[in-house]
Length: 314
Image (tube, rainbow, N blue to C red; front, side, top):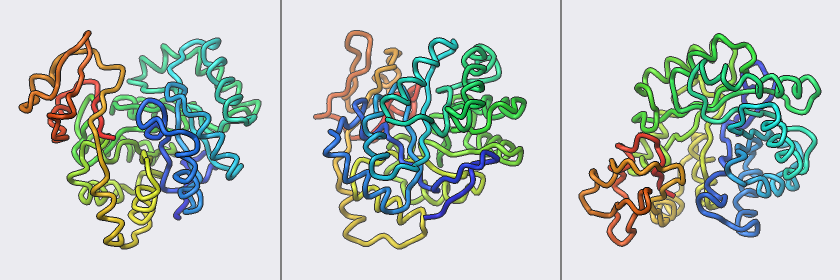
């Protein structure tokens, strides 16, 4: 496994980051017993970097990982904008992970300097916690180019976690190339950068070879977060990131693994996916998009028109 320093933080991370969302209750909802061999496979392969969030309810999985290897690098995030709110979220992370510090604490899905400023009370609290050693670095996650660009003006933001992939699906305010340019500028300024959604939330699996070629060609990324829901997926991703050949049997198992369309709970029921779906597999029920899996082809055309990127394949 290759390791990189995360910008100027002094934190060394594996190039492959384990995204916990996929195994957690919001997606696959695996039990701790079911997730243990997946996490173990990642750790045994050299993965030392785990990403989660307050929203994901995945801290029990992180605690399990830390029991396997105590010095893992843990990144978590919250949407809090007040000192009181972020203090509660940070306390929850520490308590449920069974640890007295968090390596990287982020504000979740930031949009621009306006949202940084609107969350400044929470940021000031986290910076105080950094001085006390409760967190090691502060950062933001984002789906927007503007947040990456604006972060250049804030020395307090040490780590960025932007969305980047082959087609740019999920980027809310521009193109893939514009995001890549913003990431390059951030990395040149000493920010730590690791990328999310390299396979477009599962929507780009039909083009996974091209997706891997693209994301692995971005030298500005210190690490890349993948959601992994099986030991096979861990082994596949490890081999890809290490530049190793994929055994034919592993390729076939990963390709055959069942995938289903998943609608995240932040769907606002705009109806764009319903209009796009030629299979009539999408419907609006009680103001939310709902998928009829008996009709769905997982073509992912619906995801391409979702303005909130709440349609995934898991």
